[in-house]
Amino acid sequence: VIDSMTAINRRRLIEKRIDFIVPGKQLFMPDMLLDLRENFNESKSKKNKDKLLPSAQYILLYHIEHRNDKPQLTNFSFKKLAEKLGYTQMAITKAVENLKMHDLCAVSGVKEKYIRFEHERNELWNMAKPYLVSPVLKRVYVDKKPDVFMLQTNVSSLPEYSDLNPGNQVYYAIEKTIYYALQKRGVLINENAYEGEYCLEVWKYNPLKLAEGITEQSNVDPLSLYLSLKDTHDERIEMALN
Image (cartoon, rainbow, N blue to C red; front, side, top):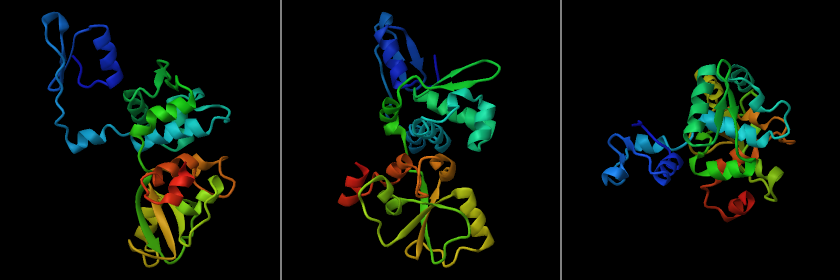
């Protein structure tokens, strides 16, 4: 009896004819001639659980993109990993559990725990794709660029990674806590949701550390960029994403 179960674990149990119950959702007891039944009446919050947490996505993308880093993320304990990526140790633990729930990583160690990735990076990316979300929380427009360092994003950063020319609108990515701090100080000039000299994409995680060592032109990392634009219905952008 288990509260929740991933699809891959469910399939393994069925293949080996091992009885299991997920209360209110699933039942499989072949020796008693009871077959699998599943309740698909999922709430919106349940569906949201199918997506990765921003912190979990951050760890995954960091691992994929920083393949040449030494040491790798797998060499850091959860405590050191939290220090490296700018999260609390509790947030890292929760993020890793989220990755484990989607069969994207494993954990080793007892006193000090370490994250383990058992798949090659390209395979890991394809496995994770259904659970990945846009890093963009919202977009706002301002008439003056805030006095903080920001990376270019959206069509402003596509020229580094594709043949697309930049558009007239200038886009920057800003981590949400920095954005709200600027907003609280009242330094965002003519902030609105429609138009302005600059568009600020408010990100769910920190774009700066993720892009370190990857961009040569102060742009966001390419995988987050892809995720932020993958639902855009613009033929030029779709070609650039491909």
